[in-house]
Image 1 (tube, one colour):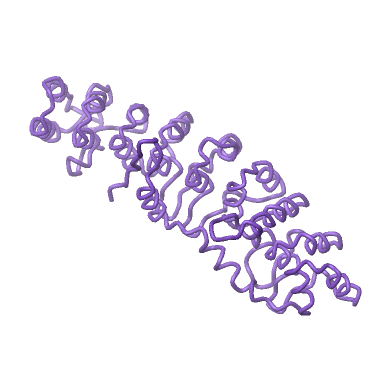
Image 2: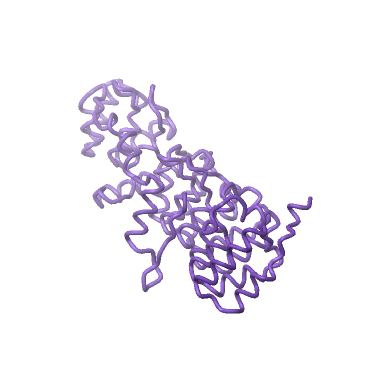
Length: 355
């Protein structure tokens, strides 16, 4: 399937329509995992209703009285949720502190439920009131500060949204495994950061310097960070990825990325790709409709400059029938004599055919 190319408006930013299309292609709904994880917890009935009220409404006195009556802060609700998780869910800093001061682990697991206390902090997303977002950021800071880890992608998203690379580093130090994080459709941390427009921010800098191999991870559609950044039209980040010698060797969709780069007029990236040792241009032009080959895509976009750069590249070899079709296609499209001569001079005895 031909990849969707990110168009840009007059200000150089992705148009809303195209961005929506890309997000839809990634199955993107950040509220979905939030709802599926929290719906049951929101309906939790604690061992005593007074505890739920204390968590939800910051009535610390009730929580203290409950403790003085002989109950344990490490108790769970009838549905199996720890009190510290209920405190995190309601963004109740007083109740959270009360649990921590009384020896509750910031990573107390629930009974027969997924998620740790940090996973239940309300994410900083549209549809969540600002007051709850602020409470959520405070709870994040508290739990991570005392050793908390998280296991769901929406917590990473929350940290990205508030720009707290310090919290991310601390959570990783605590034991959070970024490699195991996936969104509802399998987005990786690199893809999530790119989709949040964090490509030039401290979060992506940290990932690139300390967790670079996660860029090779793919989502449910076998798309990597390289694929996503190309699809978003982010040539600068693509070139940054290409600065690592093993990027192409670990890329499962090299052909698709090359076609997107050509169609998106990313000349520097295109040349970097076809100069890469993992690209052999002959097979890239075999067994495909001409318009879906690198040369065909360059000619189809009426980009004479990029087409010329491809034709003059030393790695450019095509099968004889493709050369003949290119000549015919370029003539119909009205390309000048220079392009036609460059096509005429294309070698057709490809090294990959002779080996």
